[in-house]
Structure formats: C-alpha cells, structure tokens
Image (cartoon, chains in turn red, purple):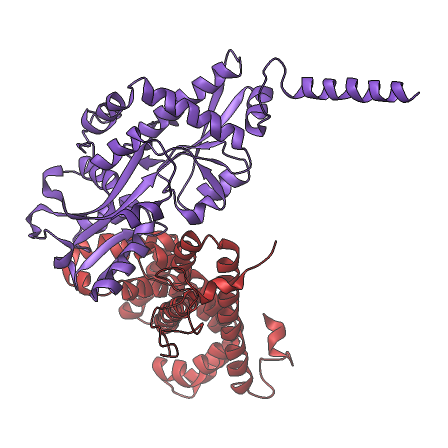
Length: 263
Length: 307
C-alpha cells in the first residue's frame, strides 16, 4: 500500500497542511497550529522522560538492593537487610508492570493523600523504576556472586570493614561485570514506558492511539512510533556500549574484544 | 458453428446469473451472498457503551443500536428468503472498529461510531438514528456550569475519541488552556472524575449519562453546560457493497415509518435497562428527532456548519 507521510505535516486542529512540518515547536511557521510532527516529538519527549526517570530510579535502588542481598551474615542488622532486600525483589518482580502502574496511580494515592499532588509521570516513573529495580538487583547480586570468594577473603585479611570491602573491592568489579545485562534493562525501560499511556501520560503509545483515530493513517503513525522506540532503545544500547568500553580494566573480566557482542 | 458459440455464451451467462441470485431479482451484494452461504452474519458491538451497545453478561449484547440492527437483519433475512440467520457478535473497540469492517470481519457495526468525512473514505454509514451531543459531566457539588469555568482545570476525556480533538480546537479558538487527562476507556475516564483526578469529563452525552447511571451514587454527578459538538452516530457497513447499504437503509426507513423509534428511545434511554436495571435518563433531543424525520447519512462536518 502507498504510504502518505504527509500526514505528519498536517495541523492537529483542522487537518490542513501547515506551513512548516515543525510549525509550532520551534516557532518556524507563522501559522502556530501544531502539526502531528510537533505532537510526535512532544510525545517522544515524554517517553524519554518517563524512561529516563524510571531508569535512574531503577539503577540506584537496584544497585542498593542487589548489594544488600549479598551481605555476609555478620549480625542482626545484616540479616534484616538481606531479608528486606529479598522481599523487595520478590514483591516487585512478581507483579506485572501494568498492574504496578495502576497501583501507584489509583490505589496507593488513596492511602497516602500527598501522592495525589504528584504528577502522573512521576508515579509512572516510580512504578517503572521499582519494577526494573527488582530485575537490576538480581543482576547486581549475580555479578557480586560471580566474583571468586578469594576477593572477599583478601579484603578481610587486609582488615577492611564490610563497607570498605564493597566500596573498594567487590562493587568496582561486580558493577563492570553486569554492564551487558544492565544494557538490556535500560532498553527494557524505554519499551516498558509505553504502559504510561494507561495513566494519561501523553507519550508515544497514547499519541499513536489518538493520532491514528484522528487521521485514519494508522500505518504511517505506527511506523513512525515504532521507529522512534527502536531508535531510543538502540541509543541506550550504544551509550552503554561506550560506558562498557571506557570502564574496562585491561586484563580483567571483559574478555570479549567487542562489547556489542555481549548483547 | 457461429450460432452454436452464441448459444453457448447465452447459456453460460444465464447459468452464472442464476448462481449469483437464485430466485431473487436484485443486484449482487457480497455481504448478502455471504449471509446466504453461511447462514450467519457478524455484528460488531461495543462492550460498555451503555445504552447504545453493550454486554449484558455471558457474551450477550444488547442496546439501542443493537436492537435496531437486529430488526434490520431480520428484515434482510426475510428479503433474502432465509428461514434462519445466526447473528455472531464481535466486540470491537474505538481503535479496531473501522479496520474490522474494512477487512470483512464485521458485516455490520452497531456501536457508537461518529459518521465523519474522514471515516467515510474507508467505510459506509447507514442513515443516522441517533444524534450525539458532546457535553460536560462534573461533580454535582463542584459549582461548574459552563465550559468557560474549566480554564486551567483538569479535564478528562477518552483516548481514541473525537472529543480529544474537540477540546484542542476549543482551547485554540477561545485561547484557554485545559489540563487534559486521558482515560484509556470511558470507565477509566469516569474513574478519573470520581477519584478527583479530573474536575470534568467531556464526552458524548449518552456515555456520560450511562456512566453516571452506573456510578455508586448517581446523584453526585450532573451533566452541565452548552452542547460542545453535535455528531451523528451511525451504523457502519463495508464501503464496497452499496446494495447491502441500500437494504439496510430500506430497513431503517421501514422501522421509522412503522413508528417504532419513540418506543425504542423510551426502552433504552428512559426506562430501566438490563442487567442492573439502571435508568440512563437522557431525554430525546430535537436533533435526534430531526434525524428520524429526515433520514440521511450526512457526516459530522455538515452538522458543525449548521451551527
């Protein structure tokens, strides 16, 4: 079938072709009606914002929880922390992400009223971040446990405290090991951000559903949205590959000469 | 030799015509041929567009448009000389209803589809029997009476409906700004209003009335303000089958001529309806009355110009 990409240059108000395809966003056109391309770009911005915020939350919380799960059994506090982090992981990875989004949007604010004042994209980012954090925590734990036990023993022999052992010996190695699976999680965060449409964040999926209804050019709209999702996820991949390359320690763990082969 | 050839062509053509419409002398219709060969027809219905088209549980469907469609199909069944016609119900959504009619999955869509020029490029619409007015639902104690009071307020509407574009146009024309929130379906949008995440819900009057009637406490909500837009809601059929469309319209004309419409309106909009015996309580509007009196399938664009 013939594709009519001209649909993106049409005004979102009356369906007429606007002066510049980017008419409102950069103030190019004298006709200030936003075009579908403007709207698409705005929607992409929302997708990136939700995914970025969610990923930031996920990386911080996931690294902390994953580390806590591997604490040696040295006392009451460490046992409590291990149980707490295990409970965290099991709670958030056993509930579908869409259900978690609804929980954060509809259910939890009913109990904690201040959360109602929070914009919906924050709530979605928290939901997405916590969901992804459970997965990242498991990968961080796997990275830590993949280190030879001699590393920890050597740190203890040097007289390092538990905190120092993690800070100077274990985490610098483990976090490098888990970069390839973290790349996948970063890409997943971009793709999973599509659930945000369900709680009225005007991101790409919501744009696709609404714009295809208004223009009856569903094929073109979905193609553009697909391309932007793929582009976003692939950019995450490239950035992570760069980080992986830069943070590599010669002679250690990253045996693969080409980082991109790992994922 | 030559004569034989002509005789053969003549015989063949009589044979082909005979195959296509046995016993009935009318132009061929792909939809009606399918109905005859399979003994069944597929009606597209909505899950929760009370009272136009909705499920009453156990994959049974009912509603104002569904009942009209059953009457139409009964009429066509008689016209085709069939003794029985099985009706299969296919639930459709705002997103998939046009493609499903286009690709032939659904033979006749009896939901809440706005007849507009854009969609008329892909599908055909039967004569309008219901004219929808887009209104505003608010909480009864909110003090909001007009769209002018909604500037800067949170306004809910449903993704994939014409109301989203309508709100945008209104913002631009009156230089006001709404904080739009989008529900993924009507029930979701109403939940936004109910939970206080939105101050108003802008949608088709029948949908608002249906959701309010279904609410925990219907008295807490009211429909206010001016009519934001008038849209014909019509039964949708395939585009490349003018004969079927003509038969549907003939059946509609018959139903209207028999004076069945006021009774149908009372049954679905003013009396308790299954499954929960709620009353929608939407009075017959002059626009709908006018549509019955002058049957037509003008698109929504014609209605806007009239105002």
